[in-house]
Image 1: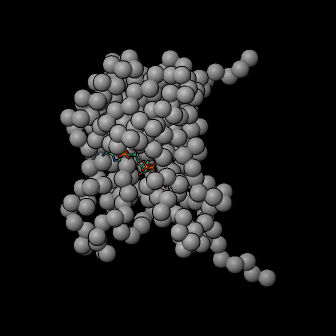
Image 2: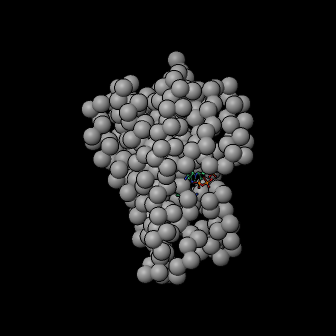
Image 3: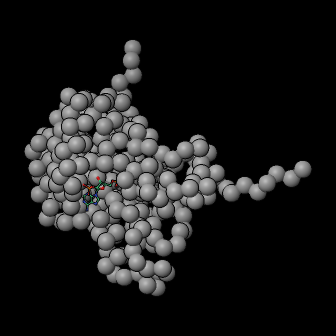
Length: 266
Ligand code: NDP
C-alpha cells in the first residue's frame, strides 16, 4: 500500500512571494502534490506567468497582488484568498527583498529608509500575514505556518544588518507561535535557505569572484535551485509533519556546516 502522508489533496495553501524563485518552487511542488494554491506578489506579469505554470497541475489557483508590508492589503487579500480556496491549511510567509542595494558603506551610514525597506517586508509582512492566517486556522482548529528565514539570520555578516536581523526575527516569531498555538492545532516552522539561484541573487552568485570565494563551502557543490524547496514545503503542509513544530530546517547544500578548511599537512 502506498504511503499517503504527503498527499495534499483537499488542502489549501498560501505562499507569499509565490510568483518567483523559492516561493514558486514551493507552490509548484504543493500543487503537484494535490493542494489548491494561492500566491501573492507585487508584479502582475510575474503573477500571471506563475499562475499559468501552477494551473498545469489541475488544482485551484488564486493569484493576487498584495504588498505584505501593507496591513490593510494583507487583511483584504487574506479574506479574498479564503473566499477563493474555501480554507487555509498552510501559510508560507516567504515574500522578501534583498539586503543589498543600500547606498551605505558602513552601518553608521545606513539610513532609516533603508532599514525599513527591508524590515517592513520581512518583519511587518510576516507578522501581518501570520496574524491574518492564524484567525482562519483558529476557526478550523488546524494549520501550518512556515516562515522563510535565511542563513544570514544565523551568521554575522557585514552591511546587511537589516536583512539578517529581520530573518532572525521571523525564525523567533515562528518558535513563539509554535509554543502559543500548538494547543490550538497550529504548527509553526522556519525554512532557512542557503544560496539559491533566483532573481534575488543571480547577478551576484554568478559572478566569477563570488563563485571562487563561496563555492568551496558548498558540500553539495552547486547553488540551490527553487525546486530544492519543494519537498520541505510539501512535508510542512502535509499531515506527515503533524508533530513537527518550532523547528528550523536549514536547506543549503551544507554551506552553514562547512568550516573553511586549512590545507592538510603531510
Ligand atoms: P525572488 O526575488 O525570486 O522572490 C521574491 C518574492 O517576494 C517575489 O515573488 C516578490 O514578488 C515577492 N515580494 C517582494 N516584496 C514583496 C512585498 N512587499 N509584498 C509581496 N510580495 C513581495 O527571491 P527568492 O525566491 O530568492 O526569495 C524568497 C525568500 O527567500 C525571501 O524571503 C528571501 O529573503 C529568502 N532567501 C533567499 C535566498 C536566496 O539565496 N535566494 C537565501 C535565503 C533566503 P514581486 O516580484 O511580484 O514583487
